[in-house]
Length: 271
Image (cartoon, rainbow, N blue to C red; front, side, top):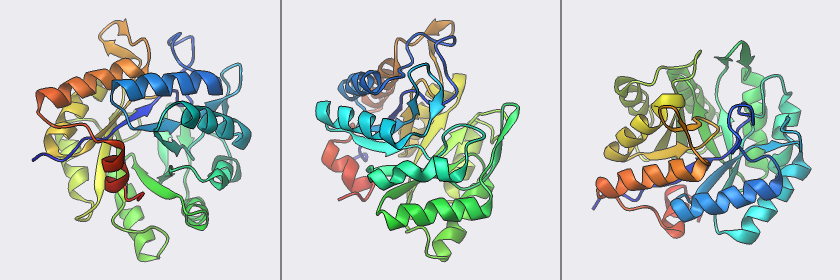
């Protein structure tokens, strides 16, 4: 039997604003309402950024707490915090909310050009975030924009800062990072050790084609307005839930079952 598919909904990010799409949620209540819609469409984990009321990207622990509480009060979803924040934020700012002990949090294991800026993750900063994750018992999702980030993650494992097997998320197709071709995904996923799980987040028009490839290859999928605002060319998605629904339909077509909550916890080793 094919393994169950975990869909993660990345519902707002830090770089998408209402000038890009009117459907991006900002407030904790809006984030929770969108999480509910994504869960109903087939997602069992929400990848969470938070915003100030005007949409300014934030890493406020108070806003993360409000959003997580609002989500958990409404729907049984896993909550994964971003420690990426937005370009230019300090490591202390990006990692502060880990103390709230979400189900998971991201650990990006390298720097990458990001538009006209740099998403900076020097070795000291990476180890600092990894140490903070371990100290609060929060399982990391290893976020990789290129192959060298896999190598760094394995060095962290050798140092005892990351436990293997781990869960990796490959973010492909962003200008400045690794490309989003089928060959790129096949290569980067070949680098992770046996027993590790992986998902892919394709940027922009690459989101759904890479989702289909991941479904066929036994991986998992992240979709949402953080990575792509279009349902198809020229048609804005009304929310991340429509993108989740598309991936769920792909899974049905491929005869791959969606994970239950219990299965999602088991495959991410959260039980």
